[in-house]
Length: 186
Image (cartoon, rainbow, N blue to C red; front, side):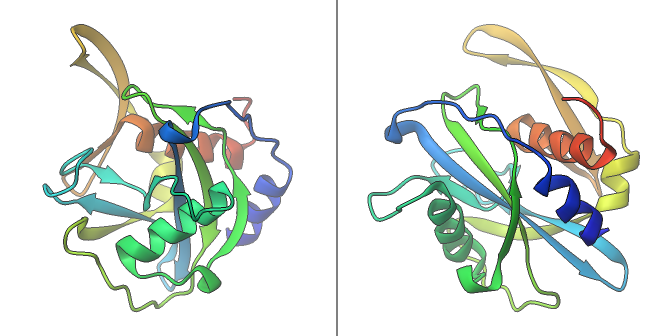
């Protein structure tokens, strides 16, 4: 499955969006393989963070002046949040830039991380980790939910896994990754 993922992402041409650095963010979609198969690593955010309190997300965050590239941002944030060293990540591809309902533009990267790994969670940012099995993502059909945002109703996709709701931009990125692997048109 890792080989398939690498091959599909190598052949994918992601869409880029122009945005001011003040609203630029990057995430890493960490993927690993163990005896149970291929998994995608997600974080449960604490209630101490400024944005997206208590939500399920990928390691990532805002561009900072020391970041040369969007990959630097994703790797720095992943290191800060869950303790994965940038040198331990094999970047295998990128998904489309995504504009969030909160006004950020996210550049997502897919990276393979070693397994097992000794994670060091930042207690101010990450409550715990979730290992989403890739086959679950391939089989699960997202549910549409309607939420209120800035006075209007917005329909968003959601995936439920082990009692957790994965929704919004995180869910959209998972669905895009699934489409790329399944060879569907986006």
